[in-house]
Length: 276
Image (cartoon, rainbow, N blue to C red; front, side, top):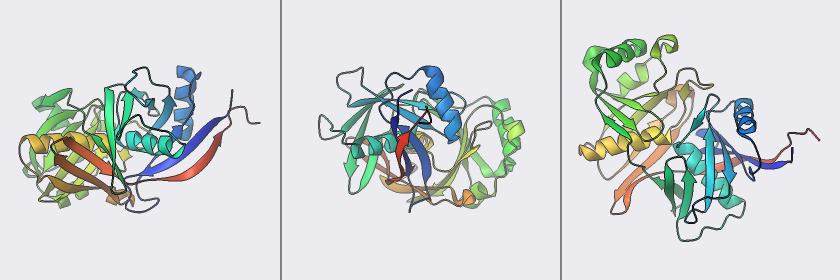
């Protein structure tokens, strides 16, 4: 198997090693689905991405996104991390913005004041979840009934169910029982004005609590915008329990709802499957 360019990018961190890492395999053409899945299991990160030539002529590149368990049609920090790696590897966008092709279609990414930001994709599922499912999740997370304000699907391709809690302290107090949580990716959040706290849980994944989660932030931001529960610009904090300092910048303007953050390459080299 040929050598491939490889980068590991820290995304959404307030400083290096404080965000969410994503492994990016450039020049992934010719790899089989089994190859991609094996590499993702080996990196043992929440996501590994593989850059391919686009199928849609409007796109600058195509990306496939794998967890240690399965392929995903969309994910947030892999989108920005892959874009950063592609630009750093001399990728040249066709226009002012970068157009990424992935499982949910085309995703627009822009560069703005040192940040990369993607337009939040539309939700494929929204609205309330079944009462018995919500109660099972509440018990698995140990959330007091009085602290649970609302629950909505915020699924933009990543499957998220989001629980809005009464306070940021209530979010930080949660101690999940992953054996009882089930297979649905669950996010919890609270906040007001320009500061929100988020946590994300994916039972069974290599990293069952995700450090910083762009797809969840995009889904929550879509919910908050629809119900006018947040200003046009604010910051989502995530990862404190894990010793991270995740900062997701949300901005709503006439072009859409943008989910942005910093990205920095911390590992840069070659993936050598043959060992030679």
